[in-house]
Length: 489
Image 1 (cartoon, rainbow, N blue to C red):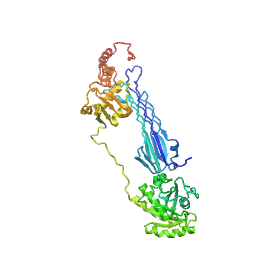
Image 2: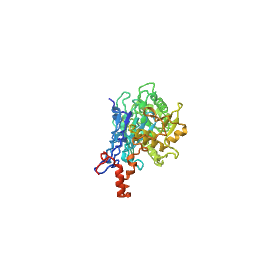
Image 3: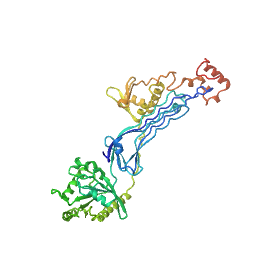
Image 4: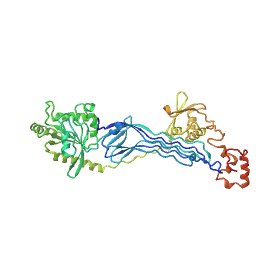
C-alpha cells in the first residue's frame, strides 16, 4: 500500500448558511410587537494549514471528499443561529493548490500558512434585520447561501535546498545517508527509492536540507520510470547535485553520457536551467571507479562545473562536497535577503462597475449574470410573495431594470438570472408591483402598519398622540372585538 502520496484531488464542500427566521414578537398586552426573527449562522469554511508534522498527502488519497458543517437557522426573540465549525486540514510544507484546470491558487510554504479552500455560505437575514421605515413588519426572511464546492488539485513539492539527481543505483540514497541523519532504503537494484527522502546537513555554521529524488532514466520527462512523478520535488532547490556512477558495470554507460541524458530530461521538464550544478563522481573507492573519475573530471571542469570525487560507501570526499553545497546556499540566502518582500496588490472594483451584466440573446430573451443578482436569487424564498417583492426591490436598486430597458426589454420578455440549472427564469413585468401582496400594500409593506391607527402600536409615535386621539384610533382599528390580533383592552 502507498505510504507516500504527493498529488491528490480534493473535493471540498463548505458548509451552507442557515436560513433567517420569520417571527413576530408575542406578549400579552403588546399587540403587533414587531418582527424578532434572528439571522442564520454562517457555514463552516474548509481551511488548509501547513503542518511540519505532516510529510505526505496520504490522508487525502484515502478520503478525498471533505465537508464542513452547516450553519444553524435563526430563531425568534432575536436569537441568531449558530455558526458551522470550520474544517481545518493539515498539509505538508510546500503544498501547491491548483484548481481543476491547473491554475495555481496558492503555494503554501512555512508552518502555519493558511488558505481557505472553500468558503462557507453566508447565513440569511431574519425579518428583524430586514425591517425598515418602509417595511416595518416583514413577513419573510432570507435563505442561507450554499457553501462553496470546489475540486482542487494538491501537489507536494519538497522544500529542500539541494536536490540529488542521477540514474538509478548511482548512489544518491547512500550519499544522503552519509551526510545526514536520513536513513533511506539502500539496495543493489534499480528504483530502490520510491519516494523523495529529505535529510538535514550541517556544514560549518550552515544548515540546509538535501532531497534524494528517485532515479531518472531516458524519457523520464515523458513519463518513463519514476522521474516525471518526482521531478517537481527539485523545483524549489537552490542547486542540483549530479551524482554520477563511475563504477557502473554497464558497458554502454559512462558518467559523461549519463550527465548529458539527465540534463536533456531536465530541459524537457523546464524551469531548472538556471539552477547551479555540482558534479559528484561517486564510487571512487572502486579501482575502476577512481580511474573513470580521473578521466572524466577534466571534461566536466572544461564545461565550467565544480567537480568532486566522492565515495558515499567509504565516506571519501564528503566534507569538501558538503561545504561546496553550503557556499551556494549561503549565496542564495543572501540574495533572498536583499529582495523586496512581495506586497499584496489590491485591485479595487472600478467606480462604474455595477456588479452585473445583462446580455440580449438572439431569441429576444435576456440573461443577467453577476455576483450580486445571483446571490439575491439564492437568498429568495420564491414561495413567499413578500420575499419576491423584496427581490424585485433589490434588483431595481442595483440598476437591473434600467439596464433591461436600455437593452430593449419589453414587458413579457423572458429574463434569466444566472447560468445552468441554478438559473431562475421569469417573464419581466416592470409595471407590476412585485409580489402583489395579500394586503395590497406597497412592496413588502403591511397594511396594518400603514393604517391610520398605526401610531397606537408603534412605540416611536405614541408620545406624539393625545389620549383622546389614541382612543379614537383604537376604536377605529377594532371594529370586531374578536379580532385575533387584539389582546386585552
